[in-house]
Image 1 (cartoon, protein in one colour):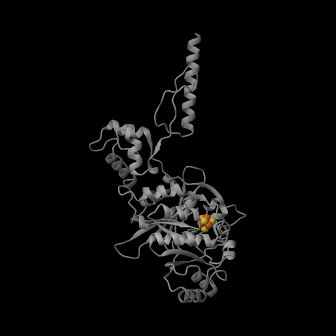
Image 2 (cartoon, protein in one colour):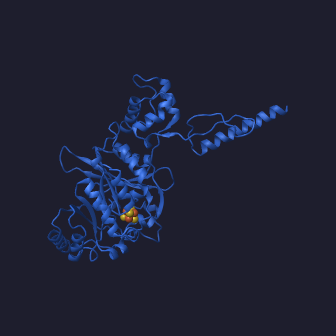
Length: 408
Ligand code: SF4
């Protein structure tokens, strides 16, 4: 009688353990005999392998115990990333169903939840609001490049964090503060979901949405590696752009690791005092240190250094600003990427046509290097540079701050 009741208690405990595992959505990768409770055998929850978190090589090694070789890992990755499958297929050519069954039990194919989608009637920019592995949503923007007939394509502007800790004075994302880092799969799935929703191919990815990519370095680089997998989405490394507001250790690491992606550094002011008031990162990594890292990167890459400059009327568009840029970048091949500030509150204004002309002329004269003017679209749906704030998350009494975001 006593042994029956002990058995019953143990069964209930095992049931509770399983329920707790299920309710925490911890997928079981395998079972192993382990004594959680004296006298009983129970199961040890192991974290599942998240498919979109890994390159094909990593998958081959993680799934090797289940009979998966490099070729099969590539085929599975292709089926999931390129084919968009949301579960492991039951059958595949020249593959045992038993192996597929084991892979299915060991893995998870996570997906973002689409909360909202807005298309700009003005220019076709599209903003997506996603929820991932947390309650707080984040945004992604699809940029249409449809002007060349027969070569229509999209670029996806992804978020790397929910919110941002950098506190740039003019950025709506800064208003949210930092919430969390996104996982590689949450970055990869932004591109996958948009790819599935698109008439034309996605050819480029820019890390210019919410967050400072260099502060989520490992996951961002992992996501970039997965995005360029030849058997996956196969985005060319040269079409993946990582943007930073000036996190020097990240730039140095990027250079040291010889990352093949394009780097854009947001400069916005070449005057340290002014820069401090706009980009607080200047207090931690001042211009002198930043430019040293930038020059090192430029020498390694051998290409023109792209420096982003968000233009604010009366603040950083004078001939003196142009002269300061020329002084700061002397001797280095650069390209200056000019972008208008986007500020729905009207605190920061974009330069007038006349002001812009004077600034460009001054830059041309002082710098004599390429200057491009980037179009920041989707402003009518708050998808423009610096406007990403998952607007539900901004407290009503605190409208998105003067919004300027060099990153997108
Ligand atoms: S501009 Fe970029 S780095 Fe600065 S607060 Fe906004 S998201 Fe963060």
